[in-house]
Image (cartoon, rainbow, N blue to C red; front, side, top):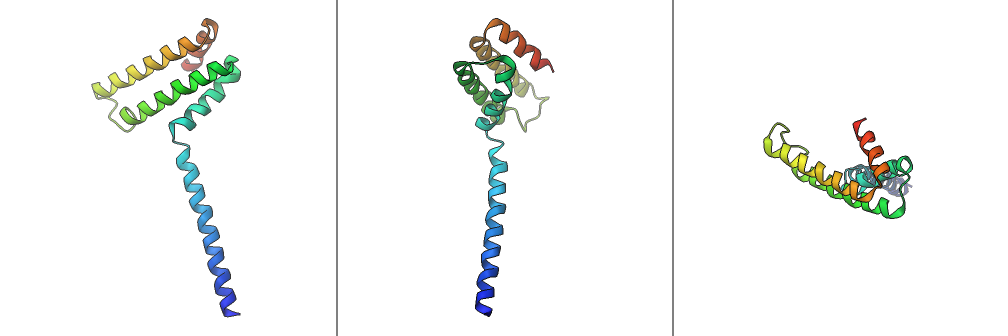
Length: 116
């Protein structure tokens, strides 16, 4: 009986530990550029009435933008001229990619959404 209770207690501890590890893993995934890009495109899609090709193009642009931001801007001193130059460069690349992907009307709407 004592042996059975020990096995049951160890099983419960293992089960609770696995749940905690899974929760930590999910929170780490939310910071990945692909997840952030997918979320942004999902938010923009109904607002801009995007087709499949536009969604794929914007996903690639936002993924590149987020990964570059993560490497060169986030966590750095924003007052540093190099960081400011990198930020402007990445923002300009994103704008160019979005402008190429969207129609003129969609692009104007996208710009207005960025102002908010």
